Amino acid sequence: MGNTRKYFGTDGVRDLANSGNMTAEFALKLGRAFMRFNRGKKIVIGRDTRLSGKMLECALSAGISSEGAEVCLTGIIPTPGVSWAIKNLAADGGAVISASHNPAEYNGIKFLGSDGCKLSDSEELEIEHILENIEDTKPNHESIIQTGNIIHEPDLSEKYAEHIAKLAKPGLSAKLASKNIAFDCAFGAASVIVPSVLINSEISGHVLSANFNGLDINAAAGVMHMENLTGFVKNNKFDLGFAFDGDADRVLISDSKGRIIDGDIILWVLGRWLKLQKISGSDSVVVTVMSNMALESHLARENIETLRCPVGDRYVLEAMREKNSALGGEQSGHIIAMPFTSTGDGLCTAMLFLNAINDLNENSDTLVDRFGRYPQKLTNLRLQKPRELVDMSKVDEIVEDYKSRLANLDGRIFVRTSGTEPLLRILIEAREADVVENFSLELANILEKFC
Image 1 (cartoon, one colour):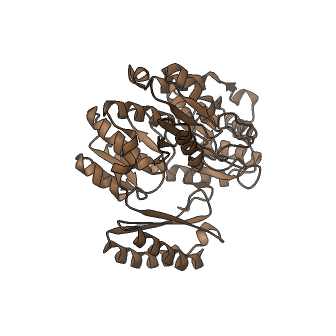
Image 2 (cartoon, rainbow, N blue to C red):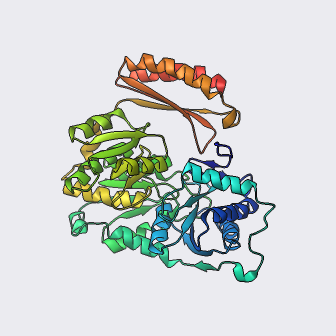
Image 3 (tube, rainbow, N blue to C red):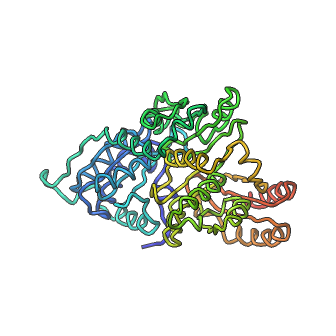
């Protein structure tokens, strides 16, 4: 068995819907391969609002049930909602049909274990090995008696909303009564959850981008288009706003001035709050290589250690478990607070953030100024060839030379291929903005020829 994954990226299998690796035929075969790996008896499947979601749900369910497992269909629910449902139902695993932040023409499938967490690289590699050794699409069980039932559990999304609402500390709604708060659902899975969360928590909020049609997920809304939320908050004199992505495992925030409070700032706030709550593991925070250097400085002043890991919320979780950290996340808004969730959860993070700013007596309008981030620039070079054909050894050689030069200027460089899109990502960070700009342009021009 090789060590390189062919189908799985950093967040499951993803492709244009109804083509490539995201056809009904492939989904059925993938479902069978997953069950021959998982060998469980009950699997939870959820999806976001994409039009192609039902097609893939039918195929994936058929593949899983043909291997003898019962399938529980939640319908539209955030990725963390599936994680919660797996544990709530004591299921053996789950699958989410979503392409997260990608446009509606894409879709994806990612699997979760019995603990509600995403599978490791090695586990996904094992599924791929099984997948490529399945003869045609013949199931293990040929008797109708050995197939699993497929049941619909639409009330699970409402129960998940109730779970999120209960995260609000007693009296929080009264303390927020004078606040105007907006929630941008990105025409995605959050659309069916946020209204119920607001009702159950008695928090007053204005819901945006929730009337989805299956073709508008992430379109000019949510975390990929923060101008939708920031413009609304600023123009309508709101105090705060939360934006989610298509499967609601990410969240970004707007202050009243329309400025973005990203994952780094959220981690700074939640890190201090968890330590105030004396939560076990709150003496360290796991971040990725993309997080701003300013975050390390702020956490150090609170005697909180910063630990870095590769990009991807499952790598964050692996590092959190290894280091016994209660909190971890990404600048992009994937936040995991282990006492409350075992995967990135935008709705959970939003509720915890409201608790935190209340308990810390924090003024959310001063966070961006006080954080004082180092200038960063992320350049995306589109790959003109398959990811595996990019000469990363030569790229790394060039990058190492630039790293040594930039280190003398109190900065850093990070270069990687995207796990979900055909891109080479170049991150430059330094104290001085002109240094960031000059290094970004120079390195991008050199590396472009390798794409």
